[in-house]
Image (cartoon, rainbow, N blue to C red):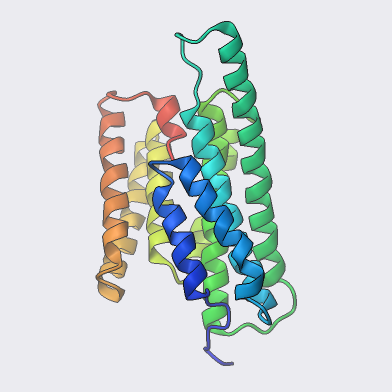
Length: 254
């Protein structure tokens, strides 16, 4: 079996996509616009490469879902709002949460279809598919927790998120993206810490330490992002332990 990566991203579209991802934590509106621009450019960039088009489309749908979820959390109604403004904010949150669910489901379905379409994928392609599928499952877990944090709880959200984080872990272990793996491990650790499950949180932190160490060996320059994620979420876990931040909101922190 060839080890050639045929599902690699077009570098021009990848640059536009990454610029949008870089804005997600500071300006969701600008991020959303950038991600949609990248999506509009996909058909021409991937002409003659239908499978690569499906994969990049699924990645963009995942990040657009992330953008919608972040915007919903950032749009929490406040006590200073009028009754009408509060109702409008809640209605907008419900719309955004629904959008996030649809986009993440489309991402999951698109990648799953590629994995199960009968293609004899190379090892490199299969690793890429597992990584992207695992990343989407991890965001599905965060979507459940985000819904709970803003007041739209879903039945069995806690157990559902726990299962999704673990399913994501299994996919990411055989994937090719150590940043995704570190992020999933750290978010799962923060979730378990918020639930008061110290032992399980420590297990996830141990997994994160391993993925960070591997990242530093395999790709030292790229491992900076893993270290930043671990540091940020590690601070949150310490604050949770000291009861310095609200557990419910932090469980939905993304």
